[in-house]
Length: 457
Figure 1 (cartoon, rainbow, N blue to C red):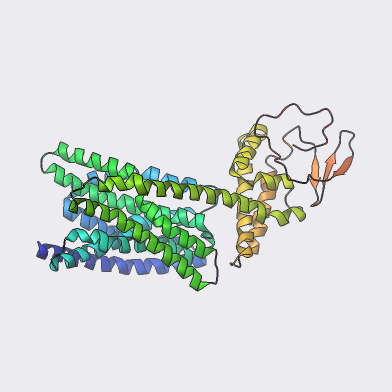
Figure 2 (tube, helix red, strand yellow):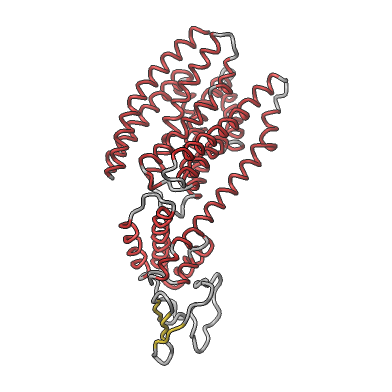
């Protein structure tokens, strides 16, 4: 048994070393691609990186369980994948995040982090077995450490090589969550294929039944476990992104929250081993409602709060554009919450159809991009004046898709201080803005306009 394990570990780690060489090439190419804005180089680097990880995973699964079991495991693992991935894409949908970065983070977790963890954990299991310890201790000794480090490395690469795409905690949660989701999917392939082999020793139906139970427990009830643990690291990475130039504090945040994630992971894995040791198999299941579920919903609430904070930050960051006559107070107010943004799109759809709704979406995305650059400048991080000018131009272009379509709104011009409104007698008169910016777009169908419209809606 020990000899077989040793041979498997040596072979696996050898293949992993080859994968590591491909990973180094991939990182170098990806770095050059990001720096030079060459998408072909970035894609080439990512493909080389993921090919190494898939080489390890494919060898380990097929060699250990066979093609049939690996196929069953892959299908079972893919069932909850759309929910996992869709959750983090939904969370970050209001901000422009390149699909290449999102795919890289998921691919890193699915291909590279899983391969690294598989190789190291197998090696640790061999060492434990040689020294007379239970191999299962690797789940508590090495798995929490190497798995959390491996998952975080992908988003860290984004932070180091594509800094402008990771500017705060919400970005970090999206990227780390996708890395954790990718890891969970690949890990589920390993577990499901192994479970099928054990069940199929009786008959094929027993194997399918065992895999079905595993899908319900791991794929549905606890599918957010890995993203949750990596989410703690994401908090540290996000805080570091808000502290440009402060290397010491950045390291403290990243390492500190990474250790928290490792601790949670060790508690989660250790509960099953402790339950077996104490003859309490339900201990693992008791931990979920008592600890993991409340922590999960706390993280969900924090993520939603951060998403809302992004919208509020847009209103604050774009305030100087009001005085510069680039945006009016009602437009600024319409960006302050996501419910107002939704109402703005509904209004544009009602008066300008689908093209108007698309134009309003473009306006909101452009405004968010400009706000992001101003926000970076406010914390002392590198920002792009060119992207600000391009964003303002996109906002002006988007306005043409819906401005003037609502017959209730009189023609008006904002000069940065007051409105110049066209009255029914044909004269343009200046009107002071209200003390508080008001929502210019109704949340519900508006009442009929007054006979003498002197206000804007």
